[in-house]
Image (cartoon, rainbow, N blue to C red; front, side, top):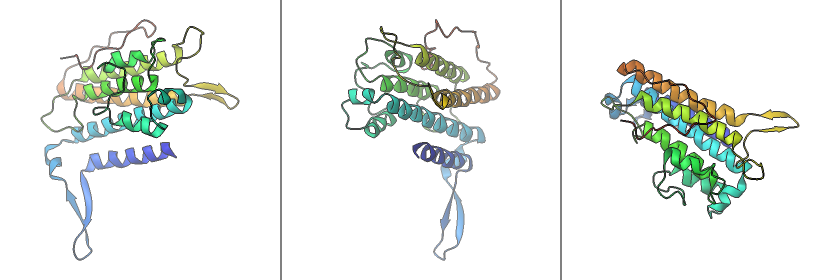
Amino acid sequence: MRRRMICKTGAALFLAALTGCAAHRDTEGRTETRVDPKYLFKTDIDRVLDAIRTQALASLFLIADKLYRRNPREWRKSGVLDRDTALTRLVAFRAAPPAGLDGKVEGEAALMAFDPGYPGDRVAALVYGLVTMVDAACEGKEEFFVLDSLSAQKFHNAARNMEIALWKLASAKNAAGEPLLLANEINAEGQNLSFEREFGRVIGLLDLAARIIEDQTGRLVSRAAQSLATSLFLPVGALK
């Protein structure tokens, strides 16, 4: 039910971002279409990038929900009453960063989730780190306009960081050899790869944004090969 709600909301936002129109009824009950004035300052590319940002963040919050369901001990570490409250805090990531991160964002925050000695909410640390990566790639903007300047390299690096996060999620273990966070599983019905699918969706969206900005600016991104097993998260916000 939650997934359907998130998907429907995302689809509605996607269409709204592309059209910038809203239907209204006049005093005689006739339907008329009005264009939001702000869309006069948006290109089609800006609208697509708006939708990419919305969908990427929606997928990351869906990943958080899935992780909390498999790892309820994590949201309890935050001192909240239920999983929904923990998710609400994550959605308000700018106003309410998770406790215990000491100001860390992006890769530094996400890495805390895979530190065996970290006592805090690992789901919050991971998703907050990934969300702030996307936010940094978007230059902290919630929507884009014609004069905004974006970096294809930042979106490319953010996409590679999602791959690194997925690898770490599957491989990071404590001293007893147990996963630090339960994610994909093999059960009687087969292998559950829902986390991989959702991460794959985010990766595809960020790569699409990088390609669009590449084509728009003519600046190619560096695609140096990287080993997941030894790599740290790539810089995003620190890039010029």
